[in-house]
Image (cartoon, rainbow, N blue to C red):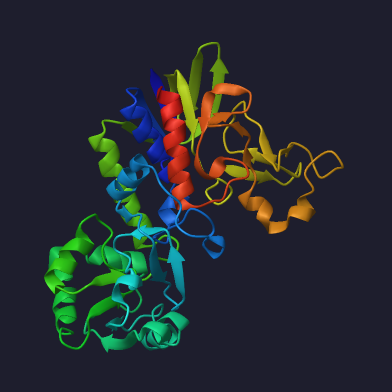
Length: 371
């Protein structure tokens, strides 16, 4: 059984991993960075504002999340502007504040354009959670040079280097006795293991605020993903797919460079509107997939092939929420009307666009394709 997966975000990675575990020969192809590479480091099942308690996860989902550097324990994390929010899981480099209730937390103060330690400490200290738990936040200056104008990604990549990481560690060690833990910006490495090495050196709880789009959390995901796919023996190719042709008992995947891959089953995990997997054709006022494929796009069970009419989707009524609902119609994990094509992640119609849902739908699609 040969399975081709299109897309290398969390859904595509999960699909490739699950299909390989089911015994299939698996190849994965992807083009640009998708939504998973823009991840903040928080892992949710539902939109976090509407989350109602912990959603139980199967063992494979927990194991795969862990391999990608994520904990699936409920936690409390914060943004770089000092906003607290719950999450069902997190990148392990992100600081879980629930473990530090009632403690003194130092907010690393660097002279940066995108990080105001004094303002963040004040905002966190004034939160209802901090007041209730008597948790204290205070800025603590770190003497590091050449950090003001670097992007958060560039600064995080700087601390992948052991020598540069030791400079940061030496500054954080000075806080022993004054603080019980450290909250840093999203700078603690882009490679797997950098945060763990720093934590061991500092010997205090240490973690990040959530990342901006294109920050350290997304980079760490890509690093962990690449290691996982290589370990599983999954062939990967960085190239766009132009078309998928489904014939009798065979699928031809046309790569943009002219090469064709043959497959028995296909998983489409190429992301939704945010990742460019679904695009708006402005001339015809309809949505379309970024590659040619025999699938149907829908919203609320209605096809998006036509402009707003009494018989189609009323774009105006949906408003901006439409961008998170439009996607491929499915029956279970299979594309509607094309049972040899499976769908996972944000490209599925009418599913919340969250990290954990993408991972679980990828597992389901991979098992179905590889079985």
